[in-house]
Length: 325
Image 1 (cartoon, rainbow, N blue to C red):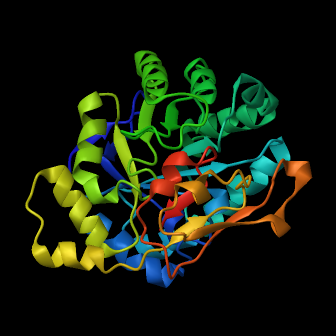
Image 2: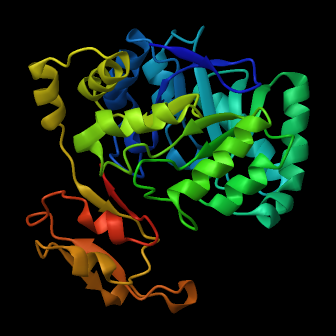
């Protein structure tokens, strides 16, 4: 597995990284022991970069899955903390759950814009202290918005940008693929490392994974591409795609038999666009779950007996709340 420098951090990361969101309570709901085989397979095949977050609940998954294989492993995790005290609690908890005494890349979770970043200034000051002490190696920020990415690219204290980036631009909330790509170029120009999230658009591009990965690699702007993988077969297939090796039929078959489902997050605003886009009649709007205070007209729900996992619903969702997991 090819490795690249993560910007100016001095950290080398595998070109393919494993995102753990898919493993935990927010998506597949695997236990640490159930998730361990995929993590172990990744290490075996040369993947050394793993992404987690406080809200994913997957620190223990990494600790169990990695076991003693920590010498050459790079771990990134994130916090939504907005106060120094909350950041301290989150950081110390992460160390304990991961079984480590430092974290390689510690990120602000979802920076929305410059004002949001400024409101988290007490957290930035704390992270800078941790970096000075050697308890974190680099400071990063994840973003779903072009405006947030622009704020991160303009902040010298931040070493790593983690944006939504895929060939269809799915998940970029406030702009186009071209807009986000341009900001990534700006981040690269100032020396920030970049690793990309949602390369398969939350599972909706999994049928053309090779093309999706190639698109991002051909940009020449990405140090690592972070994909959610929950089985050893998925890990092996993706590694083979990156290395240009043939994928055995038994691996393809194993990937196809991994159980999948459509998941719709609670942040659905109930606009009904997905319901209209579903040719199978698998989606409906539950208006009993409306919450006017949140601008929520209802909650889209799926009839799994009718859903064929085509992904057309995700293409029209303005909030990117729909995933194939």
